[in-house]
Image (cartoon, rainbow, N blue to C red; front, side, top):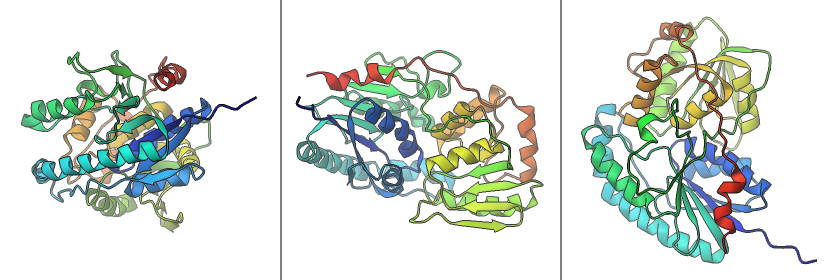
Length: 355
């Protein structure tokens, strides 16, 4: 009997913090479980993280978009818009490389998580995003239109949320544009809820682009020394080796793999973090109470934090104004809950089975 060769699927998350890479972990696992061979493609810490999680898989380095982020949140949008020409050039270069990768590795399908140049007209290509609308204040109509034009190049767009209300992404992941081939696949999380004994009163976990990640780390390292309780602090810095240091009531980790992170979440009573969408999906999966500090100038995170506070789920504070006493507000809010989903990977992956 001749064994049928497994189809190779290129999985390529954007290197913007760790969120896009971590939410691709359950996608990669599901591909393997359904008889496909994932090939990983990214750059920077996103690629480093996935190589640690899946050392047995082929991994390809793509060029970074080389986006620089403002230290002052007020200039975040201005600096980002000024780099659009450079970004478009990078996306075109990325697409040229992807055509070569498809040929060299005999790729049968593509799953791109927000990498705009990772698609190929010759094979089924999927775009994963929770941002059908890209919020940028008074230029939202423009940035959303541009993003949706890119999405139209793909065979399908998978939104990691539910289509109905209540949902997690709000107006980010729901649009009236009927020209998009959207499938709501339910929230994605690599984590699972487990009944473990609580070891920490608070888990602080950082993510997102520099320099804001470092700026928040410095602020929280000072503020949390006044917290009356045990703290586990995951900095979100992916390095060769895991480093652990203990100072007073705080245990610091530079990073954690999925298994260790899952345990830490389950052993922690409350969570202090950014209001990034991947983190929100993880918190919902685990049914956690939390406190958000959105990245300054990131309209998406500010919107999500405001939305979840308004619905009585999670409180938040601006980075510049945050004080450790703010954490007392957590108990006044309901926390996040698992929304569930009737999505089946077998049905989604049917796209790649087409001849």
